[in-house]
Length: 530
Image: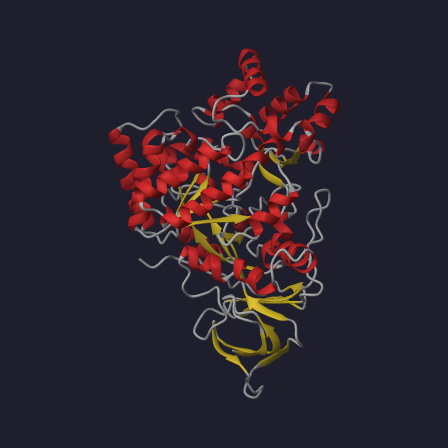
């Protein structure tokens, strides 16, 4: 099949000036860029001056389980995403010891969802990736090895630092799992069991990642009160291990922590001068999204979800939880403290009986149930087996703009797909192009496209896509720079953006004239070449 995209405004993903021209596709590859005659093609698509860009790369995705329920992944395709990175935050699906399947599925449910369409007995990353290939996907899928899953091989779901034998086993497991073609090591130092790791554990694991020339993708230990110490720890890990650092969903949580902004920017500049490799991704909203269980103090999670549920059933443990949330704990990001009961909204539950909770903030949830907000939240978590998603309002619009303009930044969705999701799952990339590029002029159009394509490809070593260039994969987006915008809201998030006309994945037209093309399922499981 030979296709010509004719007379578009070509933004090649590499910060070069845009130019009017055409792109020729044959099979899965780009075979020509520039002034190309329309003869000899099976189909000619008239771009008529619309922008033609490389397919967007979502470096923080939570489609790991969703892809088995909805393989086309329309929320991503319809905003121009053609490649996603799974395995985020140190807690994902593989590797997975068979003895941990039941508690781990419960632990993941509020973040990545759950499904019986996946045979959870795969054990290894290689076998999970084989299941992804067999299942098929609308987007290309890359995988990061999650720290928490590696840790389970040595310590199960128990708290505490690793002893030397356990740490040695973790490094051996990580080294072996990397051979499946992973593009990085991820961790989430607010999520259990990752949060139990000390700095030494991270350094030793990151030495393995550095050996494989892949980055550490890190939800740092604190994005709130202790953000400066947290950043310094991460940079020290990079310094001691030689690993490249990629901060996940970079932000400052809590308006009182805005005072830390100058020092945060200085730390980025100092890292650059020192020669450390530092990058970060960001979604363009002042609200985040994760699982509601993060409001619970770290000790509640010790031993996994089954133990967590036992503690939620204990009156004495609930009293201790309430006290710790009210007073805080050293080094712990207290979501109730920085977002408040009014700023945390329930977005998904597992059972039908609690669907009425979706869309309520914790104050409203408490009022509806005739209880204090925390007690109502504890009840909901217990009733749902911890499988509850949330949105939290964390920060300041001015910080969003400052971080968007940083050279280290690239765009991501961090899109959780269940229930009433955060609108970023459907519109993050279109929001950057419409609101922050066209309307507020935080960056130029070539800069925005670079942050969605060429830059993340370079950070993660995707050598065969991310640019419009002969010989590379034909992942392409045709959009209207004058109209592209996100249209989903927090109350009505499941709405595809406007202005995205066509999306090609490996040479096939997955989105056609702004509509789903269900006949195309052309994504691939991508593997890093060793």
